[in-house]
Amino acid sequence: MAISIAPGAVVAWEAESPSDRRLGVVLGELSETAKYVVASASWGIGGDQTVNIQAEDFVRRPVDEDDDLQISHLDTSTLPADSLTVVGQISGPALSRALRARITDTSRWFYETYHHPRRTEANTSAVPYSGRVFDHRELEFAVEASLDFWLTLGRFGERLQRDLARYLGVRRTVLVNSGSSANLLAVSALTSSLLGDRALRPGDEVITTACGFPTTVNPILQNDCVAVLVDTDPGSGNVDVTQLEAALTERTKAVILAHALGNPFNIDAVLDFCRRHELWLVEDTCDALGSTYRSPAGPALVGRFGDLSTLSFYPAHHITMGEGGAVNVVSDPMLVRAVESLRDWGRDCWCDSGQDNICGKRFSWQLGDLPQGYDHKFVYSHVGYNLKPTDWQAAIGCAQFEKLPEFNRLRRRNWELLREAFGRYEDLFELPYPEDGSDPSWFGFKVLPRPDAPFGRSEIVGFFESHRVQTRMIFGGNLIRQPAYWDRVRADGTPAVRTVGQMTGADRIMNSGFFIGVYPGLTEAHIERVGNVLDQFVDGLSAGAVAMPGVVDLRRAARDLSPRRQAVRDLREQTGPSRL
Image (cartoon, rainbow, N blue to C red; front, side, top):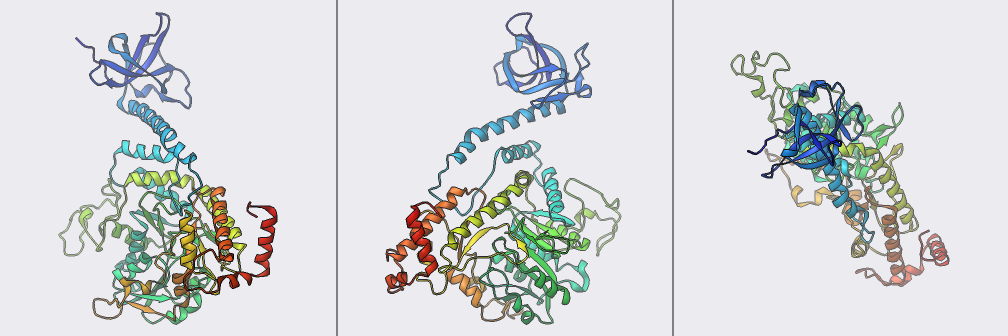
């Protein structure tokens, strides 16, 4: 009859001789082999590579042993059942700790074997605008969440929400399934009846800027409000604050603005405008996690200046969960209630998933026309959504958050190196600049050819792409030119979009601007390659070798180079092909 040994059994066996007696713990049986995987163990003080088993972890403790048992999660053997003598038994939770440690080791080995070589062997012949940057920690955390098998937000979600709120200095961070959902949730929260007379009503106006990503504007329309679009400053990429007063009417209730490509907008001017007119401010911080702006107490992270702010954790952003985002409530407890309710189906109950009766009155409420004592977990005070991510996503986010300081450092470094490269041709490009009083953690490097440059965007973008330097448009450009917003009307037939001014800045960005990546996966060698490709483009332009439809007499334009640019070219010819 085959011997059956339970997982978690403490076993002894003879290795090479009767005097060489070993101790271990059975992790599991190899299917239909009567052989067991046994982790080596010893009595006494453990180390980093062992799991400590204390007295309370034993179901049956070996006789004459008072020390803790140390289970190695690195040293295992496969042994036949008839070679093992059972001397004790540890509990299921204790065994699960040992198994988790073993699985974590395996995850790390998989990363080092499969993912790490692919990263270290990556060449610089291509320069992507973005990409995943991760190590074994993300893989280990994702596996941990899988072992928990908690299918909605759980311990990793709570940890990430807590870490982000503490980092930003806000009252509450609420995770959602995308940055676009975060913007939808933030604007929707401003319609909550919890806010009284300050709540947005259908037909109220929300000011934003014309140039940017559509899901900064869409939530305004989705909540049956009017989007008031003001122009964009092409230099900073942010709102033209001189147009804010002209955008104001008696129906204006809120402002939602993005920090363009990580560059904070003029927060001083926007805050002053909002406070004087008692307007809500939503900071779309999806591209700017880690950027700072001046405050009376010194530089402060963006995302804490307004009433609400939003984050995105799509792979292109500062940290990633694959898909994911967050809404940050800066201080107002009523906004916390509104945001959490709207994220979670609109329910009135504020218990987290897996919790019941935190208020102690779950079956004692009488709300609306519901009967007395109707279960509070099934009372709905908002027309809400289900916008929650999973705990697997949050687990990856936790590992990414640990890397945020280094990610931000690398983004700043890469942006500065690109500015040096493009700065050699300042007569051809309007160089981007940080907003006064800010220290951006850049999302991308904006490229804007000067109006009198002897080439257009299509020429330089085509050249960059043909040399495997990825480019991206500055999101939707001037959104009023996009088909989705043509003649957009509300349910009552009135216009859903109103514009202020001529939109010359937004059109300029739409017609001429683009950006290239600064993400932390780019090395200095990648940035050097961008500089070399830029040099080739300008040299080809000077020689008339770059095809540019619609531009005449390129050789004469090349002869009229500014003295500064000519001096740079002369110096490069003296020093050889290396970058200056």
